[in-house]
Image (cartoon, rainbow, N blue to C red; front, side):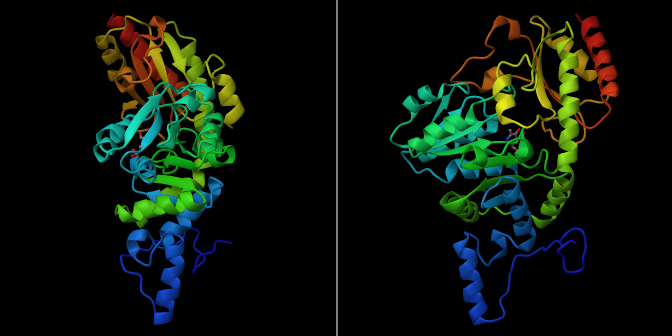
Length: 384
Ligand SMILES: Cc1ncc(COP(=O)(O)O)c(C=O)c1O
């Protein structure tokens, strides 16, 4: 039975700035209890709508608590900024989401925090040599944005822990249904809920899951930087959460089906999908992840011109061009990973030097998607 006042399936949405207390006693007791959890008796720190949602997210991530925020990037920046002060150092994986890098280089650097980028496929022993006395956080993302390198994140987190360094991972691609970072010794799980939690491309959210002192620090950082998640968006995200497992199963199957289809085509040089046996870190993927999602990249053959790419994407009907993913609709977008790297060079070989297209496979019938893409490849060939 739903645990709601009227037995409604979904909890009511509380829109509130002010929370009131009916006596001096309750003011001091309730506010005190909330403060001990890193919350407060004021609406900016949330209310029952938000906290009920956060509790569900914490359960999914096997964490003591979760913090919901207004975008995935807010979850990233709160994580990156909560544990550092001027003079500190961060270790960040080279294939992170580009705005994550821009925050480190453009904002944290102004406050005297230095970031070093490391090869996402670094050997854990080599990572040990990069940890300095002032290193405070190891930040990973796996698979990495655009290039889908799969990191041995538990081994890297173990090295960080030995050195007293907190570890965090952007787990948006897998979601806690396919990988639970905290179960693998990683301290903080970051997720852009905008993608698979919301799932319908109509709201944004970010979530950070953690335990103990780490969680309290994250919550405090959120409160003192004025972030707050809107209850109406939380209701949309909660609705998305109800169907996420079913949707992800489809994204997994359809994504792999489409990845295999691309792989068999002569106009495609490589498909960067960790679930494919041909993926260089497929064994790590199999060991860590329960399944995949609908997001992957393909590389067209070297020599494919920008005009051919334009002819391809412009004639697609099912695939819109858009920078997000995780919704029910299929998307495609040309991408340039070389622009984001500093520690490693991309492409790793001439064979992978053709244009990159990132695809999100939605919930449509894959036969329709393939027919659409056949048309795209015919237009690409005609423009050659
Ligand atoms: C891996 C990853 N992390 C974080 C984000 C940021 O999420 P949001 O767009 O909700 O700010 C994105 C967005 O595309 C992403 O792909």
